[in-house]
Image (cartoon, rainbow, N blue to C red; front, top):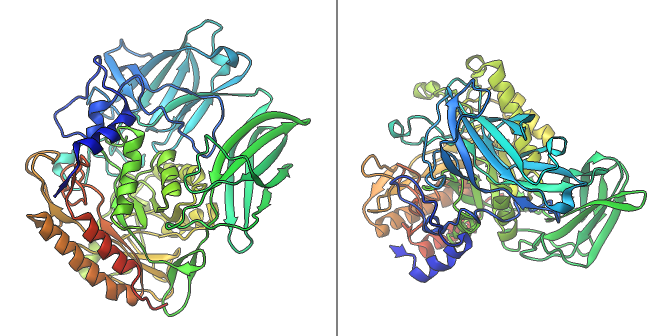
Length: 621
């Protein structure tokens, strides 16, 4: 097995700074190498929103006071210690490794100072993700609430700021996890040790907290973007807080374009006055996994000829479609492309939902490319914007799942031989649960659809909380008609087809459970080759894989065998495949890497060669 060298680890860990003496990770579980170098004064300092970069930015990550009290409490109890934001309460890197029940409230408190030049500005306080419902007080005044654990939100806190030098914010968080059925929660459970594929709960702040200053006259709140390869154009639709004209500029970029240091050559410029801006691209360059070219993007808000606001970002020109022929295929920029990637849970042994640092966040994507994959299925979790930025920058296709709700209906019909049937969970989910699901899914779509790396939406997985499938798929298509929708990855399928993709799961070897000539047929999960690496497991015992082998050589050979089995499926119409999985996760030891990312369990060069043979095999169209 390939172990990291000390030099490589040292280089990677410099991104996290040097460890401070007044804080330490909690708990006894394994940790990544990055965890050993975290500085609580400089944790996740990178600008968190790469597609909308302003020149005003204050990062509020770091040590906050925290307390746990009764759910119904109206004021924060006395501080019980400090917690390292943005790591969730239950994680090692929070410094607490605590727990929260459905009857508890988690409280956060922090003081900060405003930059002097912000005195005549509106101040936006951003929380990039809080699981699950929260309320905010600023200097003792109620400032607002939010629910939904996977998307960013902000408050204009200017009305509540004091003229004094110090400001106080208090956040109250409720998180019932799987209690009841109200909230999407993915694979979180209060009892992870009793189930093979369920993990430690995540509560509270788990992404960056930050502030920015904007003009009181108005600002650019957001924008949406679509691209047309055929026309060589981008359509940008700004969303404003206030009124004015928006000047939209497309800027020469290149591979690895950095939105914080935009280029100077303007390729196209349009002023939008209440309508979308259409920018024609001279000599357009397309984005693909082999050539991930990024353009710079700049939006400037003008009022009476005066610059009121400006944000810098980036985008790319690519088009995802469905190619016809004998079999329907997923196409990128008009050409069929077999999409092959790992199931990526996005969990960390020390940060749970939160990567220990930005370098670690990028690392998994780089390794996935080194293993020869061109796609990642992000499994019932939504990552920070910087993760999608790295996928855009490095050239990685993404299938984005919706995190499922708590109510799971088993597919008992399969035992009777029925392969295709309508979903019927609506009667098992409360109206509020269905409303919460749709509301949060809409927020996820709105927040992430600017990222061109995303090429498929997956609203349901394996009938977990699946309900009103056609209505949910229709909603998804209405929110974003530019991408295919995988109605239910391995879940309850509706006869006659809904959405664009029919998705089978089969473990351990690749096999298609069902075919539909009118749809794109994919193998949404297979594999799960297990290999236990001593001293690199979450705990001793209770470890498992769908097939369990004893050496890296044996595991790699089994992977190659499965790749050879995939090729005839591809030739007969399988358009994509997802291998389980990127890393071990808690008790699952079926990753390409160990959970701590310190050991390659399978031999990367051989896996990459096997993957290339699948992606490039001659396919019937």
